[in-house]
Image: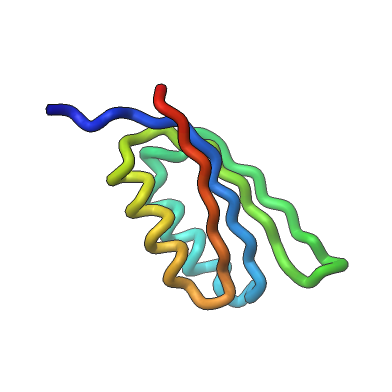
Length: 83
């Protein structure tokens, strides 16, 4: 049985900007589920925020958020709906 596709939003808050290369590498590796991306440096707070629009099954999206969640100085939250 095929996995159910989901559409969702992933919010990433980066408190340690030295992790940017690692985060970009993870995002590139999972680019097949990323529909759109917006990144905003929040200089006043000393952090960056990335929002992703994703489309994939829960395993694919979970692999992406799981890897991002292992990066020090990074917080990740997602909201998914059935397509």
